[in-house]
Image 1 (spheres, rainbow over the protein chains, first blue to last red):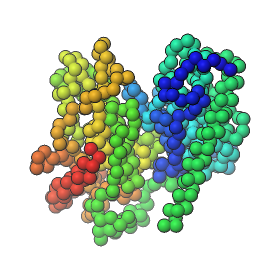
Image 2 (cartoon, rainbow over the protein chains, first blue to last red; image 1 turned 45 degrees about the vertical axis):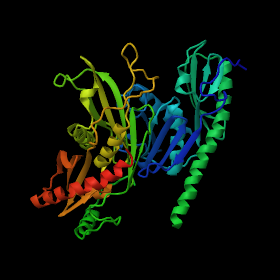
Image 3 (cartoon, each protein chain N blue to C red; image 1 turned 90 degrees about the vertical axis):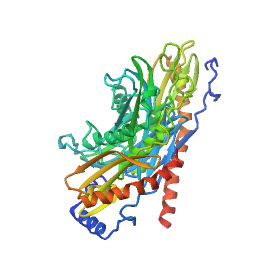
Image 4 (cartoon, chains in turn blue, orange; image 1 turned 45 degrees about the horizontal axis):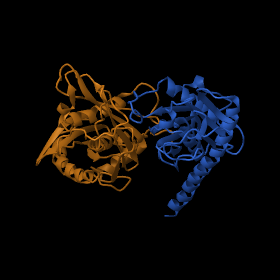
Length: 242
Length: 270
């Protein structure tokens, strides 16, 4: 176990997640949608499809194709981000796709595409993980067959201390060994990781510890996601009664 | 609902309904849907607002950056309005270079705000070659018609709550310092955009997406009020159908009434 050399600026315990808010059905036009927030980081996701893929040569007769798009709203960060995808956004779009694909049963929808649109409304670190949580819920809401939800969280190493769900302030920590941010996504109810991404420096043993911490955090995230989806179903029924 | 094109049959049904003053959702032709605006939806933005009008939802955010003045307006800060029709917001929107409506939307919002002089750009000069650039960025979250008018309402609220960032001693933006100064605005001037859509001989306001698709033309006005005087700050007609003199007269009579009606509701959110 690493030594506790780091006190969190917002007073959270080391393994404590920021307050989470999740809501399904936030984009009425979409076939499925959801928002997910870790504290000040707010992501929304919308799913369109399965729908016929154009141009035709991109179609795959054996399966549906998953297409993810992640981006920040221009004003969601301190220095305005020029609208439109940059390389970072393109990369995150791709890893989001890879994080979600393992749970989806796409063979049932040949020649189609499922578009997942993820946008960050307010950024305070952990945007890709919040985005994946929202996207996973949106896919479930859309009724895309999936064997489980995907949950995602970032675990960081501040100097020598491991902390769950970093804020931007923590991400910018520079003392000692500095901050390393490890983004993890996993299948909710099994030990299958679908996203592992980091920059920085971390020992192999620490990685083992980090994935275990992430697994614990993902259980909490899963509960929040599941509750939001259930709420929608139950409220949906009430609407129909009226 | 992956395709939202309006069929000829639907269009004809909507035309017939409009002709007897009716709409699918029970509104009268010039009724505007109920709207709610919440400010401060994105905390890194200098100002932001979210509007929900019917099922249409738009987020508008303001960012300020340091820049140089344009050569033809050395004594003024700059305003740049942009918009992005995110594929998040509708199955009709696609990734890639902006189509015409993505270009038109921010331009119309820009002109209403710029021409009304709502922002006091003269007060955004820092020194000779350094001014603030105000970025106003528009993102539809769910498109169910009338994006231009919705965006302009949210823009007014986002600008009203916008603050000017603090500068550090080197003259750069200090993101850690809490901004104190409000964005300089002209008192009481808030432009509102009103779009009128035409199908057959009927003129409707605040269409849903389906109604908007069915209509043949649109005319959009940016209007503000100074004291008791109503001022049209911008106007743009779109679409291939004409507006007659009679129709224009009718719209001109309606505009001040609609301005007062919406302005009254808008004040709640300022």
